Image (cartoon, rainbow, N blue to C red; front, side, top):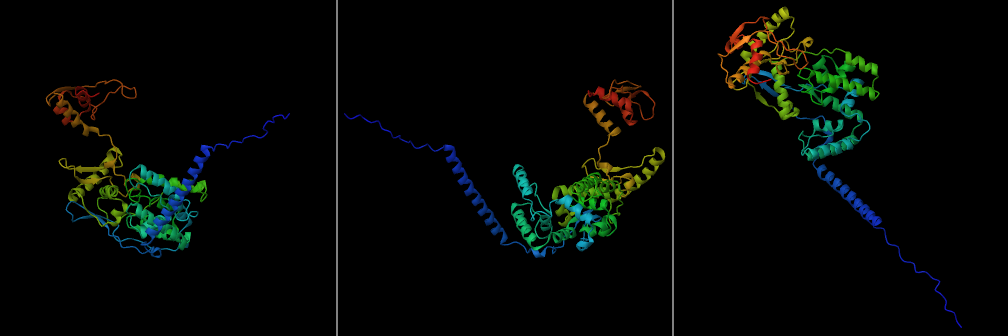
Length: 455
């Protein structure tokens, strides 16, 4: 009999494909297509914007900028010409000291000798910031890009202009060496006012040639191009300029351009500036200039040909300057006070009629360029009219009687008893509010605060 044989073969079922692997393949394919589309789009954009680019060989050719002029209220008296005719003296690369080259690279583009004209990370970072800020806030510019922006392209903040700037930067890096680009930049950039280029800046600010600049002077001048008006040593933010100079010096140490001893010595060096000529009411002018820069931008103010009519009354300004001069001399003798300031404002319109920010704008020993009129100060007795006006709103009258007697108002913010005194160190007994205000007495004024309901 035959025995039934069992089947010895196995049925092999096909394995199911992993859906993860399939998804990965699809995503990989899409990413390749996306990258190709991006490359094609970039090449297309470059081709589109390259068709009408200016000639990069004409870097130093630039139109003559028209100056901005600031006048008094009549429009007849010129207070200041914000750069007038540009001062520029071209100097060869070997006459520019290493300190200024190194300080400039440190301040503006510390990777200058390594990149190809653009900083890709900086561009992407600024693009992200601009997207978040819903507008063009940053540019991420290298020295090469800044050179292009200041010579052959406009300063308008548009993506079209930025694209052209990037294309030209790449092209210029092929046509010129790094030293040639840095030389053109240092001969072209604005350092504020009339000074274009490092030689004009050295002459304008320090009265010397660029080749004679010290490390401290070089670091200071390298601080200016970022915001020439804001950081001007003759303006309101000289302390910010000093901080920026010291930061650049410290960064130069990190980049191994100088050692720590050199940096420390440069930080301590006292710098002497050349006096700016042809400027009337300098504190007021610098106040107006800063306002214009914040409103219209540095380039428009320096090159836009603006005619600015201000509220300044030159007759009152001259009187104010004389009063400040005489008052400063008197205060020096009586109180050993080194400075004085005065600002006259039309109470109906808020117009500034005269502004003298210190006894001498050019006196560095008293920080004369600092405009005391704009600095935060204790209001002192000028606040007393507001105190009494608040009390009148609460129902008191100029005839309300106060007792001008030594009074302990209890602990102040530091835990000590607050016992104010009058400037005469005397008390006058019962007085009306009118009399107390007329004599600018302190004790009745503090009592009035309490009566008005203010702690």
